[in-house]
Image (cartoon, rainbow, N blue to C red):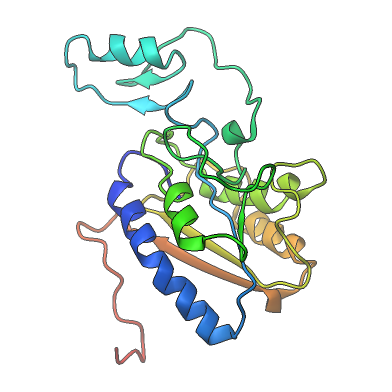
Length: 229
């Protein structure tokens, strides 16, 4: 889920739609065994040591933001001349599943687990972890976050250890209103990362993109050929 400054409405809509989404999946697949993980698109949470802030030259605003968030970038200028320290927790790691809300408070997941499963109150906990905030970096990296989330972070000792199962369908959903011009790799390597996570079993993969078209003034998908809806 994109956590840049323009994503507030999209995150609220995602939370509001989640219960219906789960009901549809249960009815369509006749299963109630789920694991659900939310990942944002940068590696510094907000509030925290990073984040992007726009003060529009309001007097004193950037001074206040930088006093609270010493490694933030305010009106395009870094608050600190030194780079932020490397992430030391999963909450600050690109691709790690979220276990806290946008304000840094625990959402109540089982300790050590960074995803929801069918034993949890899915709708209640999802509403906490899915609203990842809007103070993330403006150079979103959804594909790089995805590769980390289902790749290196699922290895033993990784932040998402145990999330991917060989016998389960992997559904990757990307929710953003921007193009990805910043992730490492290219579309081929991104595709290969998803295939590797499922041992090259294409039948065990579903990918859904809820992505705005920034080249359109009112980004709405056109009618598909043969679509009568």
